[in-house]
Image (cartoon, rainbow, N blue to C red; front, top):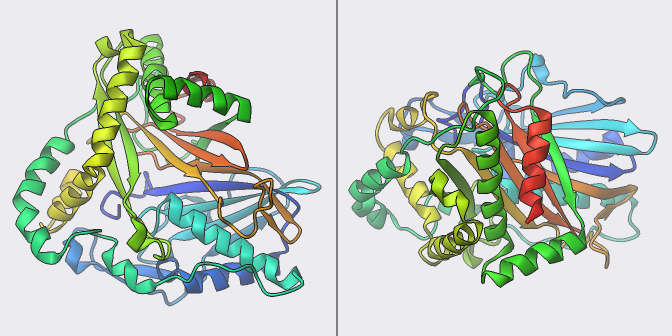
Amino acid sequence: MYADDRRPAPMTFFVRAGFSGRPDPTRMRTAIRHAQMRHPLTRAVISGRRQARTRDLHWIEAPQPEPYIAFATQAGPIDYPGGEPYLDLRREVGLRFFFIETDANRSELWIQVHHAVCDGIGITRFLEDVLAEYAAPGSAGAPPDRIELDAALLERRSEPGLGRRERLARLPIDILRGLRLFRPASPVASSQGGANRDPAAGGQPFPAHRSLDITPDGIDRLRSLARAADGTLNDLLLRNMFLAIDAHNRASGGPRPVRLSMPTNLRDAKLAAMPAANVVGMAFLGRRPAAFEDADGLLQGIVAETRHIKRHRAGLTLHRAVSAFGAIRGGLVWVCGPGHCHSTAVLSNLGRVFRDSPLAGTDGIMRAGDLVLDSYDLLPPIRPLTHLAVGVVENAGGLRLSAHFNASAITPSEAERILEHVAGG
């Protein structure tokens, strides 16, 4: 993740939390600081040259561990420090917090997260800790019970389930598999003419985003369609994503192959107590235009493929390939070159969030003092030629789809149509 980070295309993602109520700045700063104590990587920076081998890069305690925190009293674009969204992990910790008052009694929290620090599951756990700390001063008793975290587990995040001897033995085959895995993909067709490879280029909104909510009845309908194909909701969303991008491509220049990347959670029960970290793998599903002519057959193929991915933990293949290339000086920089497109788009399903949180009531809604969590968005990172990433979050009985897109390649209305197609079943 660090090797693929560059100023015009930050390797960062966002979560957006919408609240009823407005946070108290002093209490919130204190809550964030206390939550950081449970999650060491959120108060660390990287030491070492960017092109160094992985083993020559090190996390160290940041001289200034407090993240950038801003409070805005009116809605508007995110006000990045220095005027740009790039987050340099050598100089600041990998989280930024932007609180925005959207009206008299509503607010939003945008968290910009460097993906080298943690993934969507990690930042969600961190936010739950922040809200628990925020709620504590105003609660009658002690803060809600939280799982005891074990910082020693962070040593296992880079190769979950593998020992050093096994990693070395697998090195040649992992490099060969990595070369296959990193084969080129076709970007989403652009109706804009020439798309800018740099999603954070000046003059473009960043992050450019759109969201769509699916009601509980709509979720039931989608799950019913998935079960009819002996698949999961995520299988159906993947099928719909393929069809949505194909429809967009045909309207914007003609059919082309589509390759989707699907992040996979590599945590097992032994890593349940790990603090916030990046413990995500990646699987790739590719289809040629002819496959999109048979929607039912496309879904059946996806069901079979994702079963194979889960059964054989195929998401580890990317993890192992990255580790193998990371053992070669400059290897990751070569793999992550700005001219490489490894996936057309991303579909990242965070699943049901806050399901076991003590802050969630019987209705599943999170409450922290005077704040009530109304919505939660995941905006996965986009890359120079991967112009679209869709995040999926289930919270308090609803399902929310959020598109993060390169505004020079995809218009807001096109992003909305893609989301509607993905949600349509």
